[in-house]
Amino acid sequence: MDIEIKDKAAAFKQLINQNTNFVVFGHVNPDGDAIGSTLALYHYLKNQGKKPKVITPNDFPDFLKWMPDADEIIKFSENETEAEKHIKNTDVLIFCDFNDTKRLSKLEKLVQESTLPKVMIDHHPQPTGFADIEFSDTSVSSTAELMFEVLLELSGKKHMNNNFADCLLTGIITDTGVFHHNSEQPRTYEIIAELIRLGGNKQKVINKVYNTNTYDKLRLLGNNLLNGMHYYPEFASAFIVLTKDDQQKFNYQVGDTEGHVNIPLSIKEVNFSALFIEKDEYIKISFRSNDKFDVNAFARKYYHGGGHKNAAGGKSYKPLNKTIENFVSLLEKHKDELLNG
Ligand code: 5GP
Ligand code: MN
Image 1 (cartoon, rainbow, N blue to C red):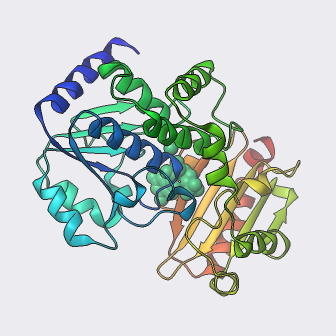
Image 2: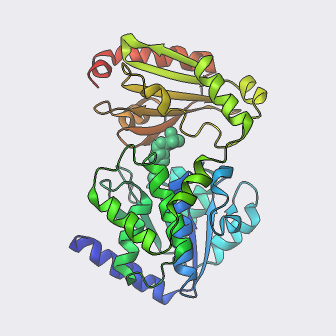
């Protein structure tokens, strides 16, 4: 913790001490780190007698629904009135795992109109600076890890319990792909040790997140690899395309493609992978790279998106076939970087 973070933590602590009601936001299409860090903060606040609410713009995958008090999360897409009521009647707004209000999707307007104090806790690059107190650190594995550091600075381990620990373990484990990436710092493992000491159950988290597949979900994975994958060794790239037809065929549910984008990247010759999912209003795209190729810059430049250097996402508003045609022409354009990446 540097001095600047200590100052911010003192300001955040004061906000917590002086207020009772808190709304904690995760980003659209919430992942394990978004749900893990928001719910951990929820437990930390609840454990000291505060009244927190977690709100997400939309639903999250079934493999995160076991998390303690996940059923208390208000999804704006399913319950706009209740979400709005809480946002208007709370004392403080807190944002986890994103740094740009665009990531709030249809909730963005309500947040922008609010004059309440805003706190952000996040690990993505290029924060837009929308909050009053911003904890931003791109060197950590996950927002969950940063959440632990910030709350430890605020009040030690006093309000941390086993539920809190399971939530943060989920955030760290999912954002590192079970310690495959973003997990080179010894500090990550010191925090894991602390979370286990607090009663967190690492094996339970892994079983709930990774060993609760449906039959259809595995068959969708098989189809994506056999029929949906395109391989361009000349551009050190491979990508998966998931059409609406195939979504129907395999009864696609939110989260069913989690981790699929990483699989083409495991081909020896591949430095860059992508996953295209055809939706009603746009094509949702995920990008991953091995090392040098900056997918955050690529997603920002061409696909209205962003993320991290090696993991990012975006959208295309062109039809699927045009989107793929255009993407392949970009591979050609970036060929030299890709082969180097
Ligand atoms: P995923 O591919 O797993 O959806 O996202 C990978 C990373 O990119 C995550 O850190 C996620 O928050 C970020 N990301 C995904 N989609 C977008 C987007 O449309 N805009 C921005 N700014 N970040 C995104
Ligand atoms: Mn994250």
